[in-house]
Length: 241
Ligand SMILES: [Ca+2]
Ligand SMILES: [Ca+2]
Image 1 (cartoon, rainbow, N blue to C red):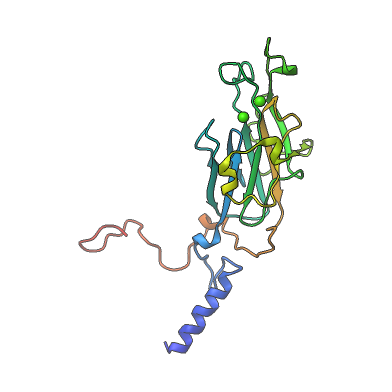
Image 2 (image 1 turned 180 degrees about the vertical axis):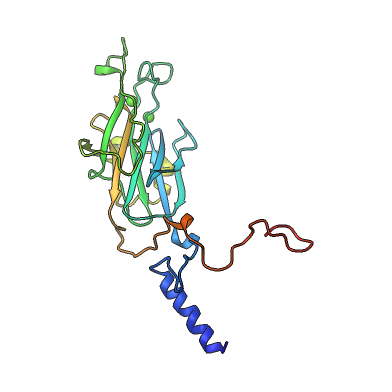
């Protein structure tokens, strides 16, 4: 093939790949790290993050020190985000530090596509306490989590909006300031002290930064572009590729 033709073909594939996962001639190009977006998440005290019904991140430190979790995620739109956030609280009393303290919660998230937490997110509390702030006779009220709380089609239409909190109210620790949360708001339900287990949900219809991104969500159901690697084929004298 003449050199000029090769250049043209490569150029076309690269250009097409910017907006589509579907190269000419069918199949689907494989996603690369450049197709991912960075997710920064900070929770007081811990969280599980689901994107489009799949678990993508868990806080690796359940209590303290307060940490930022940063992971790469492969977005697909519309994108449904569901978060289980927990303040550190004894399930029997709602308190911490051997039932001597009422801790407070707080959650903030920013994705590289511009998705941020704010008061447009849905929020519902599933465990609160000590009821009435009564630390002498602490009680909790808990509701079981719906089995499919993280599912894309879960009906959260009856849920209230999350409440936004200021940095001063949440008082995040230094790792929060070391990460990019510009434009994001701390959120929780209405009572950041007594509401201890909270689920947030949010649907991102299209990338907030306006960038067109390929949709790789069907990748497992198509034949990738190019010859498959591995598959048990063993080159002579070598290990499987
Ligand atoms: Ca609390
Ligand atoms: Ca806390």
